[in-house]
Length: 176
Image (tube, rainbow, N blue to C red):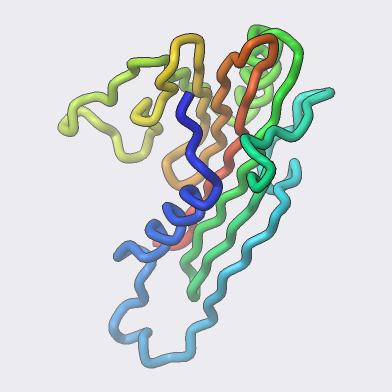
């Protein structure tokens, strides 16, 4: 499975925060605006909105890779936060998937994206619902999602030999 790097995820988050919905209205631009950026090399269960799979270990693709990171970017009432944690387990794919299906179900209907999942045509998309537009690319992979595009939890899983490698991602966008 192609794994987006943590720096790539941070770049995407900064782009999301720079979109027009994150810009202050003209009348508000002259007022003082609190803004900030926070980056941490940690993403705990609270930030992820999901528990860590029992016995899971940190997953690093190389020695410079970070296994977890969280980013917060805000300006006035607008903001975006992303938390990512990469893990691995020697349990079966079925066991890890069952655990996260149950955990995600506590937050709503779980969307399952398989390799080759295609998003619906643009005219059929519901902007308030999640889509399978970023599903796994390799056979055996699975992406589980719950929430809305502005508040979502994602678990991306891929078998790797005798292990399962998976990423937990939480994305929250605040403001109009």
